[in-house]
Image (tube, rainbow, N blue to C red; front, side):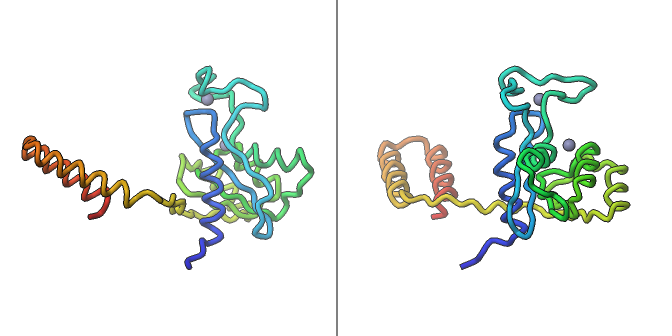
Length: 189
Ligand SMILES: [Zn+2]
Ligand SMILES: [Zn+2]
């Protein structure tokens, strides 16, 4: 049995959180971790109870959506709200943090930033992280969530039956071939 690594485990959590983002401009997730424990998480979204970009459209000023609070900030603010120390913690983010989030991350005492994707990596953000001794590391996300296809055998036999039926109906040879190839790919026959 292959156990998922800590890096991938926390990165998966951030990608799961990103699916809750309410702004379509960028779906981002952030997970704050201390001593290998998840202490907070956030995604790119409106203030609690506010309208969502996905419902009302973005509120864009100077080419930026100003409605949402970034995932990293939401995660840090969750710690503030519930009185959870962030000093010495680490953060896992789907995208390299923007300059504003970079400053907040440093100021909150986070000591490492693991990011899955580069995102307009601001030179000043990189400089500030280095200057503050905050480690940044690129950790590409390898999706691990596999859903067990319990009815696979039945689906496969249904498709094979249908292909047989099509063959008997003498449909266009080329079309039949396309269906056969697609089925082969899908079921790795
Ligand atoms: Zn928006
Ligand atoms: Zn940000």
